[in-house]
Length: 400
Image (cartoon, rainbow, N blue to C red; front, side):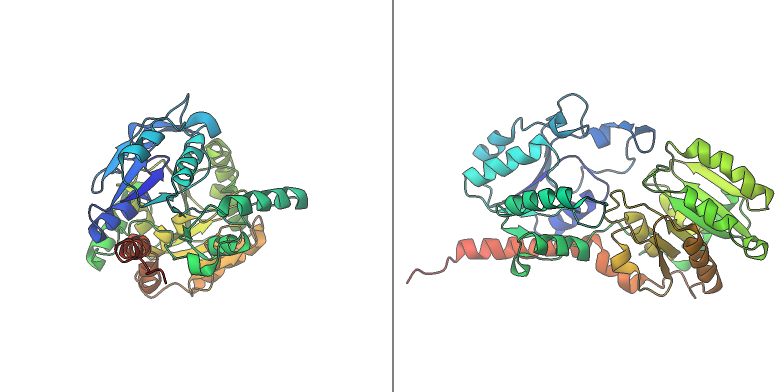
């Protein structure tokens, strides 16, 4: 049995485990250190208490170990290794899959697996371009990863930069199987009529005219995401280009009051803004349907991927992404995607103008790409190696 050790239920990993259960039923078990994301907790980024409103613990085998020490997810010691040794003693694990090395819990799993000779697999989002680092800090970090990865039997890169990171730090390509970063596709089975009705309803709720071009931001209103760059970029546009635009901020966070204040300047120029506040998972699709262009202006402060881009592409939006977001490498060459230098408002302004001038012919324009970044595809990568591992155990190579 494969043991998957995760810190907490995450809205973009639980669907992969559900798909994995469909592919290899009964052959893995997920062990969570905490279920704080289900119970609800104060999210520093959103600036409020968050509890996801879609099930994250159904559809696959899992156990919550309750390893909290103080406030969960608040530092290395906040998730302990309590109960991990017992899991290894009482379960015949053939391999271990880990999703990060952030907490004491993760390193206890690593230790227990290594002392028993159990192969360790990893699927994590780490890459090397998400931060600006000094040469010394980069060298120390690189050495630490090289030492850590000597313990790893197999890796499941989520994308190109993640794969490059593994290669650079000693994991050979022959020990890697893609398992792309993904989100549930809320639009895949939706008809054009249903999507249009969703768009119309959401716009009506937000008091946005059907003919308006909606520039949307989705996520935490925090410095890392740099949402204010959108306002700066639009203010640089000629007045003729600002006509018929609406800016929609979907999310909450510490910059919300500042954005409201800056919004007044644009509104004087006739560009209305809408602030939805935090929107939970069961309702988020309608806001993507209401948008025409989604902008992710992240700074180089740890945006290892940017899953809102996956969601926007699934919905059929055009997208503008800063080059600090890891997914820009994956999606930057698509016809209705524009990439701009992080922090460059003038470049973003030009990208938005180009995307407005060349809209997609329909909302399914990115379907062939988003299907390759599906939860099913991600699960298939893990299932493939699990099947190979089981086959080699049942039919070991003969010793000459």
